[in-house]
Length: 427
Image (cartoon, rainbow, N blue to C red; front, side):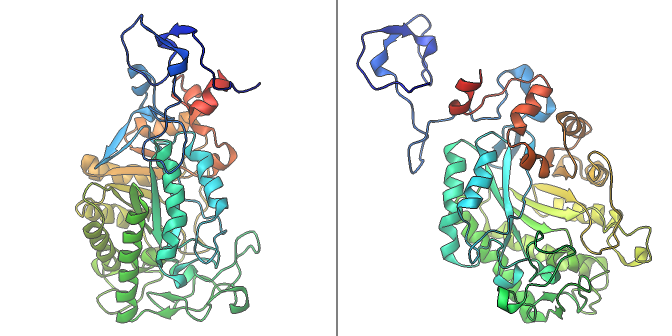
């Protein structure tokens, strides 16, 4: 199959065959005037994708709840499928590389409603591994902007998850050791600088933890603020604050990892204070029309263990969600666990969705709610939206099938737009 060379032919073709033009039916135009329109504001040529991939073609298609648009402040997702942030452990001194471009663009060009960049450290000591991405210095903006520019050139939306690993910091990439192993100084780690709300290591295979003092708390808050400003400068469409999976902000919330006796420990209000302060800071910094997401754990998963009376519970998650809904948070991304090796292993399709549904039942339309975890088919995702959730957050299944959006649309009998470079060959 060969490409056409540019020629000036006198051949006239029906106007309905021309792409990207709006003219009266029945008119014609010379072939020499057909233009492969460029994407607006892209730093290089790439064809305009209008409407963007992943958009339902007809009103009847958009009536299928998984492919119904969702607007959060100034951002509209063309469908309810979100790519979950997935750490790649492939950054160079926190800078995104071509691997990250390839990884994310494989989804972006195919039309999820929103793609979330992996957990991005707000300070060097906040990485889980030495190869995590970061936004703690200005030089890390441009590599992120390259990916954002590509997303926008495709008409797609992209967000970033800001995180601090806390007591799960300074580990090696998961394929190097499981159970996890400490990244020592010789490998670029910082095992003597791991911090948390209290001096409680995540496990006996993790680094020792130094309890944060007031100066540490102020520094980490400032790090979230400056990282958010850099994310805005890079052009992202949304910011997510990571407060799940046993990372720093979650570890403040859970009494399992927080035994402080000051204003940041003890009562529910005190344990959630650090997260609430960070959310206040982020909402004040990012543009008013930019949505703010928060990922929380619906539970520590320890209800049936010896730690049940001192863990983060589903009731705690519901209470926190009610508070976040009144703080300018636009979507609560409900995940699970991460605080202790004894957590219950969940099985089955959409196995964390019940935590999200419990939250949605209480917050209603005040804030959007998403679920993540073993959402492997369109019917499973569609069922969660039909039951009242707003977004299906998908991770591993996108790795298995980057063309997931189109395949799920086909499964549900929905016609969607796809990138021109793909669609003309796939007809």
